[in-house]
Structure formats: structure tokens, C-alpha cells
Image (cartoon, rainbow, N blue to C red; front, side, top):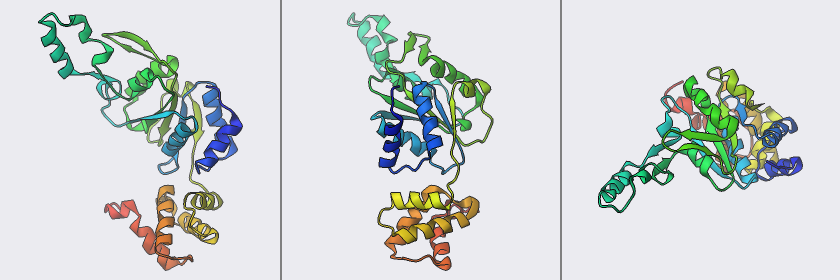
Length: 268
């Protein structure tokens, strides 16, 4: 896909997504080489958001496949519209429809992967949290990622009308196969430091005063492993709504607990 590096950088800036030059270069190379981009890192570092922002930059439709255990073709590729087929069988018995039309694209329920292949418009295909699916699912993806085509037993091979931009996110819960990694450009997203956190808060919560964003960032980093970028942004909004203009240890501890998802679920 033809893309300009400077325009890509401006696009991330305009969408309020803070990203450094090294990471933009990885995104740029994946687009130029028509290779999927694997975005690896802990939960809460902006992996999924990167795909959403990139779809806006490219003016492309975002199609998301959320991975989990037990994925099969009926969930990710296609299933047959049985009700429509039964109607056609009934009509064909009266001579109104040829039986061969039963197994055609019109009778398919398109799941995310097939939607991406058949789309006439530009598409960003997000395969989210691939490490939650079984390793066998990766082998299933290889034809799509190598040749941007899918083979359906009843219909044959279908090549992509427009090659989708593929973003794969990985939380690192298990090792990915070498066959998959060879086909992709790699990008790692970690948690931001205090300075980066302040910029992110200042960019996304515009009402927050300059000095307060620094204090929020410093306090968020102090929370350690429980810190999540999305929670920090929610927290900044909470501080603004409650009209708390200064960083006070007792206050931020109380408000951060309100947004502590693990604690509120009784898991910590």
C-alpha cells in the first residue's frame, strides 16, 4: 500500500495517539511491504487502539476478529445461511431456482476474515489477542496472510478484491509459531514512562491543566503493575469532574481504587 511516512506521523498526531519514530517506522514498513503487523505487549498499552487509529488515517473500514479458545471456520470465516438455503430448496422443487445456487457466495454468512477478503473498500483487519486462540488457528491463518486468499471447499479459491491491512495483537501469553512470525513485521508496545504518560493525558483529556497532567502521570506510574493507560485517562477525567486541581496522595489513592478493575471484581 502506498503511504507517506510524514502523513502517517501527522495522522497519529491528529488522532491523539502518541507514538515515537521507531514505532511509526514499523507501521510504515508493514504497509509498504504488504505484510501483517504483529503488535506485542501487555494489556492496556494501546495495541487495539493503534489499529483503530490506523483505520481512520487510511480512511479504511475496521474489521475486528476477537480471538478466544474454540475458534473454528464458522466463527472466523463463514457459515451457510441454512434458512435461505431451505427456502431455495423449496423453490427449486418448483423449478424456480437451479439447485447449484445453493452453495454460492450469496448464501454465505460472512465472518470477519471473509468480510475482509470480499470487501470492495479498503479494510484494516484486526486479529485481536491471537495468543488466546489455539496454536492450530495460526496454521489456518497462513494462507490468508501469505497470499491474501481463502479456499472454500464448496466454491474454490477466493482472492482478495483489495488486500487488507492486517494488524495482529499479542499479549505474550504463549509463544507464536515461527511460520507466523516470518510473515510479519514486529512491533512491541510497552507502558509509557512519566513524561510520555503526561503527554498522553494532556492530549486526550484537554480540560486537564498542564501541571495536573504531570501529577496524574507521576501518580499512575507509582501504582506499579496495576497501572493501565486507559485507567489513567479515566482517572484524569474523574479528577477534573471532581474539581481536584492538585496532586494529593490520599485523594489519588481513593479515586484510583474506584477505577481498579481487579479490586472491584474482587480479584485482588
